Image (cartoon, rainbow, N blue to C red; front, side):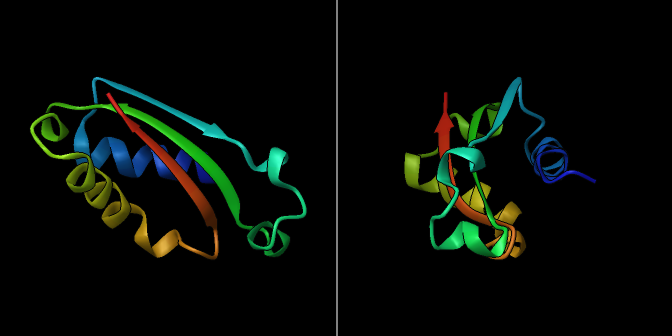
Length: 83
């Protein structure tokens, strides 16, 4: 399974988002330290009822908890936009 699909599957299962868009920005970061070992850079845009009453830190922590085992070997950098 492609990593973007794995990320999407996990976030769908955890948050049942109304909106979810995952962007693989890895090509923009070729040569960066973390990407040299194959880890990617991703942007996640998400809207979910379960995240709406959380602070920015709380929502980011919840997302990181779902993806924690993929870091840093598969995900080097993660930008999160909760809407």
